[in-house]
Image 1 (cartoon, rainbow, N blue to C red):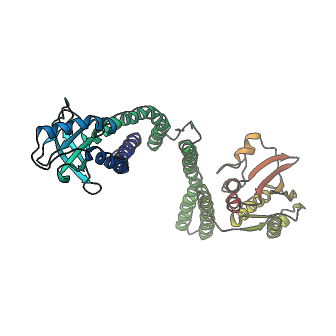
Image 2: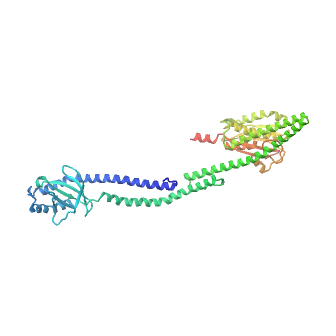
Image 3: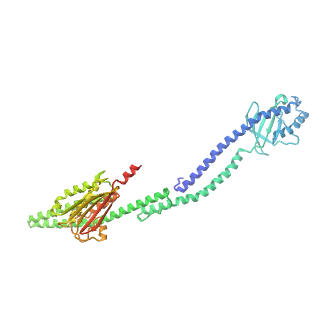
Length: 472
């Protein structure tokens, strides 16, 4: 039978350990008991032999028929000998197998079932009797009848081994079961959080992504519950993002596809009218829309990979001041065309360890956003600041109005745009910046300033996983 419940497995393990412990004890007890008993007997043999030789040396027993006088003389010696040896039973065995006992003493009927030679002709035998318990008997040769006589000494009635084991095993097993009854509620209490976790996981697997576990203790189950909650939060967030992204993609793709369809119809109509200049114009419009779609899809793929925590690029050192300066140099044509005023304030200690391609993408998006939304003859300010643990990049751009508190937060969401804004774009640039900051355990914020908006991204000097590695 396969045990599927952990509690049943624990109980079965407890019972198995109890049974094995009892079996080991029985084996050790049997070996120890017989060994110690035999050692004690062997130590007493010289004393008993000396006493027997002394007692029977003075008897005048002929080595012939066992007459009544001889038997009576022997029997009169036995009471004193029995008292000296503190024997439970004591009898003399004649050469013919007869038994001589003390006067008025009855020897229980018995049969021998095992014997062992200890020293010389001395034997240790075990008798089984219907009237008494098992008898452990020492059989010594005596000088009577030319050394053919024997004496059997039962110093005390032996407590049978099986009875000893029974008398021990019953209370021991009872104690084990009592301990089991005490431990069972503890096992149940310990496993209750695990059963609750199982129910939550089943509900979560069937689609209820709101299921969470309340950790009871700070043990393995408690840590597993917290890990489940973290996993559930991430999965719920990813699922929500996927639904929102799907809805937003459908909305964002519909507009360029509609414009492509209209341009295609106009181009076809112009072909019928042999107006080839309009055909070229509409084809160029289609080309522009396709390029916009291609850029949108590329941005969506990047955001999706980052949502799945897929690393793009390798970890390495990055100087954020050098990155901002390089981006300003690349943006010179746009700055000249829009006649923008550029102001800078750079720190020269801005090297961090990061996913350089993604950080470069984030700062590039911030710069592109600032250039795109700055009005002609506006102002761009770029600055870097450093501390012992973090490095910040601030980019300010002129803007025609002040954003609301909700807009300052929502502009970092995918496909979000400022209300009333008509500047073309995918609406994913700032969402990518936010995701890069999140993956680097950094922050991104937007603030209204006089005549514009200030964006600030702050990143740690080292990635969290590298800190952990260096610590261990």
